Image 1 (tube, rainbow, N blue to C red):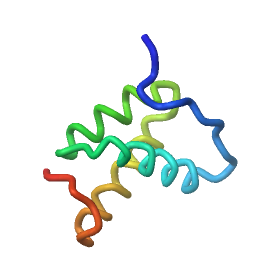
Image 2: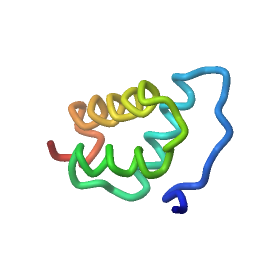
Image 3: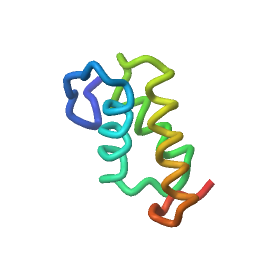
Image 4: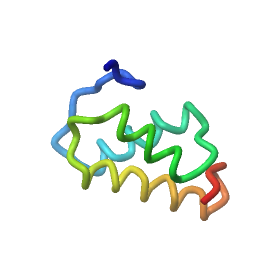
Length: 72
């Protein structure tokens, strides 16, 4: 099974990785939080769950500030 997004090398800083993951997912304009999480799972299957959750959290915060388009 291929990955939806290109596999990037992880940095030493988890916050940087989470931001990169969130930015990558937003290129696909997920309509809901669930769709964003699905993209994160498919795109980064070998990354720790905690890092995928951090990326989803960034997306949700961005949405609350009015900069995103993800529905809950």
